[in-house]
Amino acid sequence: MENKESIYGLTQEALIEWALANGQKKFRATQVWDWLYRKRVQSFDEMTNLSKDFIDLLKENFIMNPLQQVVVQESEDGTVKYLFMLPDKMMIETVLMRQSYGLSVCVTTQVGCNMGCTFCASGILKKERDVTAGEIVAQIMLVQKYFDERGLDERVSHVVVMGIGEPFENYEHLMNFLHVINDDKGLAIGARHITVSTCGFMPKRVEEFAHNGLQVNLAISLHAPNDELRTSLMRITRNAPLEKLFNSIDYYTETTNRRVTYEYIMLSGVNDSPEVAQELADLIKPRNKLAYVNLIPYNPVAEHIKYERSKPEDVAKFYDVLKKNGINCVVRQEHGADIDAACGQLRSKQLKKDEVGA
Image 1 (cartoon, rainbow, N blue to C red):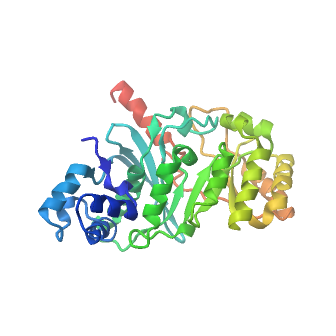
Image 2: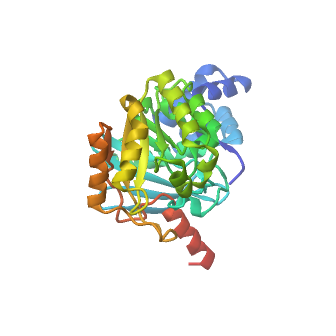
Image 3: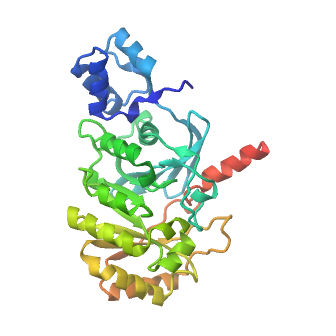
C-alpha cells in the first residue's frame, strides 16, 4: 500500500483547511465528511456528488481505510476481538464489547508497549511505533462496517482507549482521534461515552488533558496503593511516584470537576489482601467524591506464569473493605473469557505463528 495518510486522521477543520488550500470550496470538504462518517462509504469513488477531478485529488493525497482484517474471534458473550494489519504489516488489536448500554469498542494506540507492566500481554512485545489518528479511527470504522454490511441498526456508541500501548505517549494522534469520533456531524460519539486510560507515567499530561476541551472520561491504571508495590508491577512508574501522580489528578479534578476511574487488576497473593485494600481506601478516600475504583479480574497470560487471578472470596473481601470505607467501587464484568481475552494476547500469538511459518 502506498505511503499515504488515511483521510480518517483529519478532523473536520483540518479537512476543510486542506480543501481550501487545494482550490476547493468549504462545502466540498463537508460533503466528504458526510460521506465518510454519515454514509460510511468504503471508497472515494462512492462519493457520487463530487467531481471526478476532486475524487482524483483525494486519491492522490489520501487512502481511506489503512487496515486489513487478519483474525476475528467471537466469544459466546458477544465480545468480538479483531486483529488488524497496518500498511507496514504490523499488527494491532481491537475489541468490541456488547454492554447493557450499547456497543463499546476498545482501541489500540501503539504497536507494542514500553510501559513494562509485568502482568500484561501488551508489553511482551516492545513498542514499534505509534498508531496514527487515521489508524485509530479506522478501528472504529471497521467494527461499524460489520453492522452496516449486515443491515443491522446498531452503532458504536461507546469507546475506551485501553488497548495496546500508552495513549498519553501518543498524545497528538490521540487528541485528533477523539475530535474526529466526537464530531456531532460525524460519528457523534458523545464525549461522556469515551474513556481514555493511562498508567500516569507522564503526570503533566494528566494536567494537560484537563484542558482538552472535551468532556472525555479519564481512567488511571493504578493496580497498587504504594510506590514499592506499584513499581514492582509497573516498571515505568518508578519515574512517576504516586505523590506526583495524585498531585496531577487533583489538579485534573479541580479543573474539570470530573470523576476519575481507578483501574485495579486483582492478582492473587500480590495486591489483593484486606491490608492492601485498606491502604487503597486511605489513598482514595480524600478524593472519593470524584473517584471510582474498578476491580478487574485478571486474564492469565502464558508468559507471566507467576500471576494468577484472585480467588472470588479474596475479591469479595477486598471489595468489602473499600465499601466499608465509603469508596465507590465495582467488580468489572468479564468479557471474552473464552477467547484471547487479555489485551495483546491475540497479536502475540499471531506473531509467534508467523515466526514458525504456521
